[in-house]
Length: 368
Image (cartoon, rainbow, N blue to C red):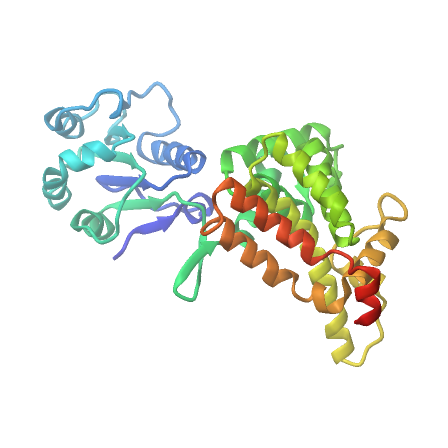
């Protein structure tokens, strides 16, 4: 039976799978690896931190195969009958150097010990991967992904769910859904940084208070997030000149264009969502005001008057352009990760987005 599990599923499962003779943590998310490693350690040797666990950092000093084999073959005198645990950290090089020995060991492992290896790369088309998948335990410690056609992309809904659950269980802070989404947009799927930001939010939130998107903006985003939101407000209002000035300020401060996309996208998606809500109501034959659509899309009248200003910006965009925002953002994201990844071309892509929302010149508008 295959025994490869996604790390968020492993961490969330109350009845966790029993560690096998060979366990693998693979992927590029160090915070999730550390959480999974701590759970596996407890499953193997219990909560007693005094029980000795042999750990090798393979990049600092590569252990010999015979030493690792001796570790897992030796019965522990201090673990009360529990298996001996040997941990190999950053073990990609060790796997490359000992692939055949590992294949042979997985086929005939020692019951006296558990070999836990932490690696970045763990290709699914290798014999070793397939062997551990059948007889061992391996945990995929990459951010969660979802299938979109023939490609995979980040499963944002799963990360947002993790943010809300982790904030409540570990930091005793509750987040509104749009606040968790904004935190992800600002930080990206870096789980260690998300954990730090949740700890920061917990310090500022009052007991029983739900963290809102505005709080995330103020506490986590700082002046860069405020400037980014000012940029989006100016762009949506059609003031391309002011938006380009704000963009230049952010880039001159050292912000990478790709890092700006999260908060820009979060802000613009509200206009797109409100447009879609308004159009759906129209198709149902219902009368709906733009303010009601914006409120359903997550826009709040805070500070007082903000909702009216957002409505004015949506009117400036118009339903035709606002209806294209989702597509514009997808094209921007793909270009910044591909053809426009270089700084100068990335800047040009952001400027193009701003110009798409600019007010038409008065003469051109009169002719339209």
